[in-house]
Length: 216
Image (cartoon, rainbow, N blue to C red; front, side):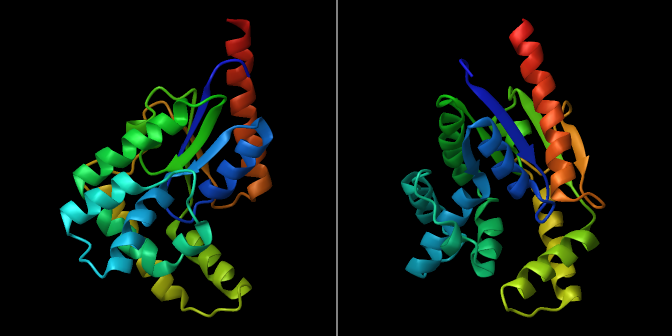
């Protein structure tokens, strides 16, 4: 690819957008950014310092210090960090700081796949491809339970479902950059779709866009 190419992937937690983003980035040899990890990095910093999650100035400082090239998924994937991140993510100034970093990441050659909650609507509204990956809350809860059990843990499905519904409500209901599909996003409902089928569907959309651009 001679020009920067951006794929924006949005959707609720557990819909499969992270796996899809990794597959697409690998296939098209693009940079990859899970923007949710940037908010988790801010939350992790505040938790580590023992500071309240609504401490705006501390959260802003932590956001400025986030290094997008050094996000430790293993550490940042902890459930407590995720819960804290969705509270930090409602702070408008933190969002603005991180969005600027995310935009700079997207502009670096050869381009990038970014996944999150507001990529197609706010971070990269001019992305070449916008995907909105979703699935029913029940399906997402079952996937999360299977993931926990596969790592030797145990959890209650009803608790996970309630947690997912709470997070959806928080993400979709926030005043600043709520979770919603961009008007020109391609919708992928993975409720009854395996990741391979979702990947092939997404790849067809990307290939068509690339073919159009090459003809232009």
